[in-house]
Image (tube, rainbow, N blue to C red; front, side, top):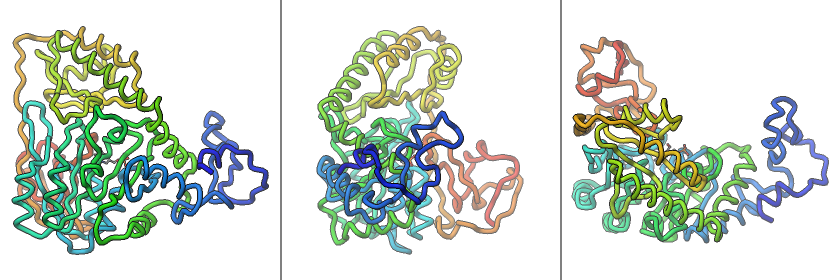
Length: 441
Ligand SMILES: Cc1ncc(COP(=O)(O)O)c(C=O)c1O
């Protein structure tokens, strides 16, 4: 029986188990529906840590749909899926290559695995102020220098930039390196030819999807995907690692939500919703281009992430104007551009509202966009595992240059570290730091 059916069928039993609310709210009545299907592992309800029944079946169906060897349901976000993937593939002291634009969970994974990191800096686009792709040639030369166990990268990026995973996975295989792709923002890719191919289809060993970002599921829902072609490792090892990090009381509504999400995306209606969304965005773009709006577009760009600039106005001012005058909030903005994320739940009306506002924003013809400088390569003084939980002292900002930071500089979104503990403080970091700077003693 599916997880959804299991939760919705009338329970004829009297249960003296957790959770203690008895499926009814005692307080906060407005959340009654949260309680209704909130069970724990009562008899017949299967167990996420050792699934043999409904959860196993639901995961199997999702695995078939996503064309994986195994797909695991995760109720603590892509974060936990990333940690589990890393813990499975990385042993202490293994060398790990990590794209610098990875989410901070990868840094946390380096602490937990005691992997030794080298950072790989992706290509950048100074006009848009964003990281773009992983250059396969540069990757190949890096892999020739050292034997890495794993390469971890993000594709698509927050802004929808996709790297050539087919080429990258070919290079990783040639060098005997596992490839983990954080595909948190690419959960719709399996369901439309108008979107890039999935990382798993292109040869990645492991990928992670976040279902709440674009696929319409609840916060914290995610999937960990293992490729049928992964070498020398049993999928049970991933289950074991998930069991290290995941709660022993997973939310059944979240599990049912994962099942429902993938089944819906795979249905005629789901596929139609995605195609309609892409079509509506195409229409929005072609109309707005006549109003001085410039969109980030290339062959491998995910159109559901609307990244734009407007002539005659900075990204910050555009963001503020849309927020203050039109009540529209973007996901992220920088000096030049604004990012509007869409997904399966984005209505035509919502896009119309954005379109109408963007047309009305006043601009200054003499304003010129400046390129955005990118950070130089990080100076790693201590590996993440060694920098963790160290004694620290405070120094004045004027004396902080090249000292080893005990703090992260981490703008969120996108949750990509500009400085991590164990790295030397460089000149451009100083703008982000308080007068008293925490450094490792
Ligand atoms: C690229 C990327 N990976 C992973 C995550 C973590 O996802 P979650 O919030 O589902 O744990 C995020 C969240 O912002 C992200 O942007």
